[in-house]
Amino acid sequence: MPRTLYEKLWDSHVVADLSPQQPGGDALLYIDRHLVHEVSSPQAFQALRDAGRRLRRPETHLAVADHAVPTRSRGAIADPLAAAQVAELEANVAQFAVPYRRFDGDGQGIVHVMGPEAGFTLPGITLVCGDSHTTTHGAFGALAFGIGASECGTVMAAQCLRQKRARTMRVELTGTLSPHVSTKDLALALIARIGATGAAGHAVEYTGPSVAALSMAARMTLCNMTIEAGGRIGLIAPDDTTFAYLEGRPLVPHGTRWTQAVTYWRTLRSDADAVFDTSVAIDLGDIAPHVSWGTSPEDCAPITASVPDPAKVQDMSARRRLEKALAYMDLTPGTPLDAIAIDRVFIGSCTNGRIEDLRAAASVVDGRHVAEGVSAIVVPGSTATKHQAEAEGLDAIFRAAGFEWRHAGCSMCVAMNDDRLAPGERSASTSNRNFEGRQGPGGRTHLMSPAMAAAAGIAGHLVDIRTLGAHGA
Image (cartoon, rainbow, N blue to C red):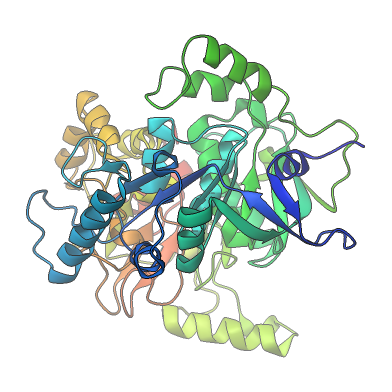
């Protein structure tokens, strides 16, 4: 029987079929690797202690503090809650012998940036984390998905999870992205098209002739945003681009084992005649720079559009949701998107905090300066990325343009640390969610690409990057 990539990954990890008479039923899956951070892990470790259990395979876990950590400095953490969370994580990993990337060490970073950089993420594995954006790791052809805190404890104790088999969705990409249009724009355009629940219950595989041209950073951005369309799993088949990224990284197989691994990894692709439950086709040439205007990632439009008018929406439920979103965002129907003034710029997150993202933003601000009244920060996704950016002189470019250069962490993507919006402040953000209060209570978030966020900081308002003549967006 021809199979999709998802079906191959699923089948190779089934320990027991718990619903043999029910297509798409539950199964017990073996979990190869688990990323651990300070926010979702305390309950899991406590559950082990309460039950008197040991960690089944400590070497298959990798821990780091990322969500709550400050980005202005390293060393002692001033915020009592953040300090307590990091201290608890450090005590837990020490007790259970979990490999740990120290908060003040060179290996620290956001789980979904640090994991791939370390080679912890590999094709063909199952990988979980107590974080919904674990979809990121599907860019390597891994079956990766977010889980809850109690499930983290189950993985720690049993190395298995009960899961329901997903339906499959193919997103076929053709054509070429236009200059100054990025994969973030593609992701936002897709979510706007199919909706925030359009991929619910599906494992989404990105296929088509255009996938081969995408860098690993671009693939990670695309898979990262899959959860914003409702899909817990995003996938891209591994290829030579994947192998080139992985080769030589610390936790990747070496020597003969590397050769054997690549031979197997090349089999991880959907069969030519595999059948998907749903298909979507996108011509990349049709994508324009996108920004969000509402309180869901599906509330996106090309920068050339205007704020929508609820009065033109026939469905009353949709109209009420739109009215509520515009009230929160304090936007008037018909306002051109490129006329919306901003207060803050955030460049970073597990979606767009990689070196390629920082290069794209730096190319926009080089020789320019942040608009008066705008505060802008750049937060690398990992300490390794920070060091690389500094070696390339990107930090100097950002500082000269009036941006703050920070240490690695989740930062303003989520209001669990010192970096957050004040009530009523409006941000141009490269993060993944624009929910109410996501970047701080009362804060208003507009999602966009690194180049678009950088351009907004320079202009003082949302702006079409194509009008600035930036390079490498």
